[in-house]
Length: 178
Image (cartoon, rainbow, N blue to C red):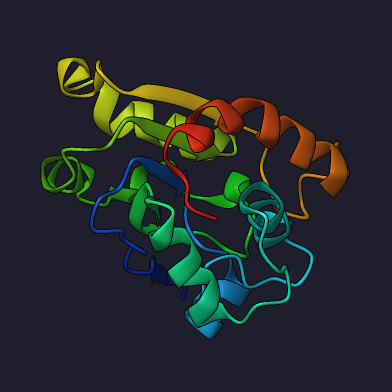
């Protein structure tokens, strides 16, 4: 018996999304806890707390509210995939089933920017969406960011924060409400 088909999490969706942050597929810890970026060494919530100037120790419901209050939604490119373990590199490409990001885009007329949390998210988005309907996404700014995963150890969390700040601050300053 081989690895099972994984199913992702529903989006954290702000009613008036301006920024959508996309990962690839939640890691095993996140799937087990039903929370985005639940691994204690994942730097996502540390980065978001710094970007939005909020308390980094807030609980998960507070973190969700903080994103929504700041017109930020969070989701993954993939709805389903086969992945032995938690590493993006282990995702079986032919098993990928994309989330309905085209429907999300239709529901969110204020969406301006999509930021990719890691290379796999960008690669899967390109494969499932840009290659088939580039025109739908042409008015959005697409930003590649270093993965917040502890598996991406080429950068320390503080270095990742700096790159996320440099890339996202121009957009966040125009609409965020910390």
